[in-house]
Image (tube, rainbow, N blue to C red):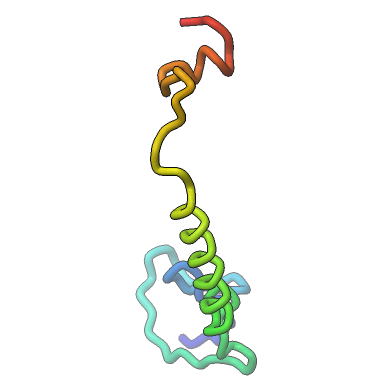
Length: 90
């Protein structure tokens, strides 16, 4: 028996776009043919997108590097966080 179908490759699995006339756990064989317009995966960033993201990450890391490395001497510690934000509770 043969059956033509279209599918989407998603998260490592072929997902048919229409129901297949197959019993559960049926083993099948076939040939994969990319359709026109399927050369670029919309979830896969292209080279320009990767470059843009790298520039943004570099700018973020530079901003983080400029943050003060020494704590302020305001008498408060990290333990005071909940008390300051939520009041004196347990």
